[in-house]
Image 1 (spheres, rainbow, N blue to C red):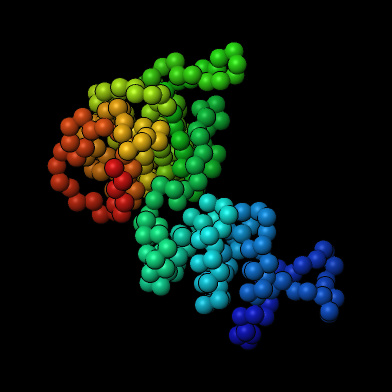
Image 2: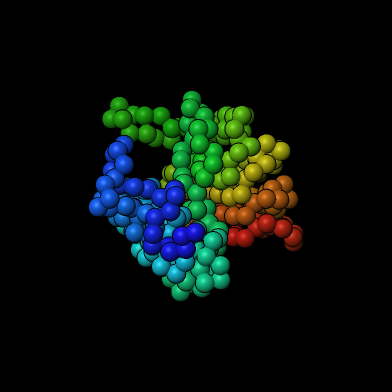
Length: 265
């Protein structure tokens, strides 16, 4: 049995075409194969290599740590997820030193994709779907403008999709419009709609509700309603991120939630 981690194994990749490599050829197995893949210009290939890196003990572990400074934000987040979920106590200690926020499950752990009603859900796994809660129309210059401030049609199509039970992350985006006042009654309509569909959203782990804009000092004039029913109806929810101005209390009572790891207000 080959116990040397630097030697190629049965399923390691080999550089070359269809023909078997010559005896003097370069074999891309073991930790050297992982290092070569981490030099790929493709972010997806580098992220894939990190999964194999953890198989090579300390040397592979150091490669994952180095990936926290990868040029791609997505590779950085993937490396952080591996250290948090697969790196044990040592991985978590590394993240605490590098960036404490990465120790927590975040909405950014999923890859964002805009939901288009005419296309539907295409890749539920590892995807956070953005659903716009407003309606836009293009102007003669091809730019989009908000023509209806609060519209749940796209969300309804999303909730009726046959793959919605596989979705792990959802972002409900309120209008990208300066200082728009959406009152808490409309937000309550949204919350009730989501809770009513909780038997469809059986795998939901992360949820964003509120203003999609980035504000100086995190201010927003979008008014949000009581979110307690979200926690009551989604027991698998690990991340709840809310961005807006609470009309009253965001949570009207105390509640124990067995799965919630990150609450971002």
